[in-house]
Length: 331
Ligand code: 13P
Ligand code: SF4
Image 1 (tube, rainbow, N blue to C red):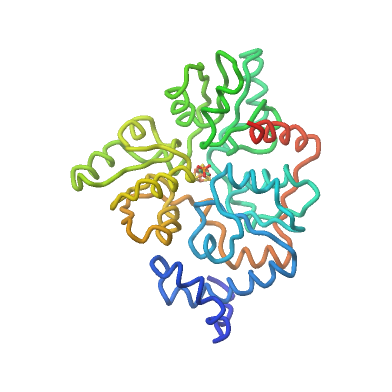
Image 2: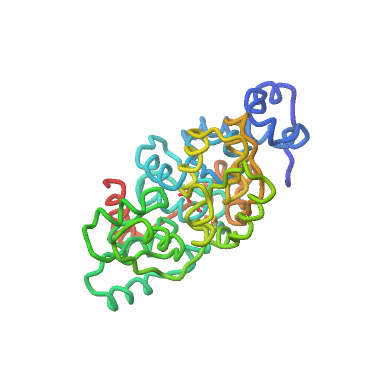
């Protein structure tokens, strides 16, 4: 961390209840560095009438320390519609900030680091979607929320990994274009009779998991339960006990209460939910998302102080992207 803020006894006391929740995943020495930022962010948040949304992949000091609303992409998109604050700080990646801005054009939306991208969002452009429409006239376009506002604007409806099958089936069409994640498209295709035409995007975090990892985990520990995100390759999904969005994975752990669980997804997930499930042991492997990890406490504090990096979406794009997002939320 740069520009360290000093820890005072009163800050230590005010932040103690938060530390008690995360003591299993954050060391006391690390907490001494985080606590002054958490204290300053929570104070400034009130002064600015700001709300902090954080994705499940944010680190525990952000997820438990400063976030007002946490969740998967669908939960964050839904909550972004209901927010009653002057400023929305989105801790996640840039497309999540854009989603909040599309749904809240009159509020100030900031992301702590505008460089926080996503390999899926970068895999497709608005021009690609227009070319696909020419190639497949009349076929509806379902777009994963992990895309730019410009791509959403070219789409009929958005989806997240939580609702993708439901969204595809809601259209009543015999076939749909499903963009841009090839593995999510294949997962949906295996759960519906609708013909799915995919794009070739991949999540650089989830594509690295291998079916052999799952086999080896089970060989070493036959009681282990393996759950995965649908952005993983199809042979991985075929080998696991459950596949679902980040929120669906948390619900699975809550419902089943298995003793040992592997979450084939981004590493912060297990750290964040460990606090809630003290009796569950979360076994690795996991992979880090470098984009999600760009967000840090000092950058959140800076974004509240300066209202940078502000997310802006050109109005003609925003209105069309809003239509696609609201069509999803209505389903
Ligand atoms: P969900 O939280 O919607 O499952 O998405 C996972 C993801 O990779 C977001 O970037
Ligand atoms: Fe994008 Fe994958 Fe990172 Fe999610 S985990 S932000 S899909 S690169």
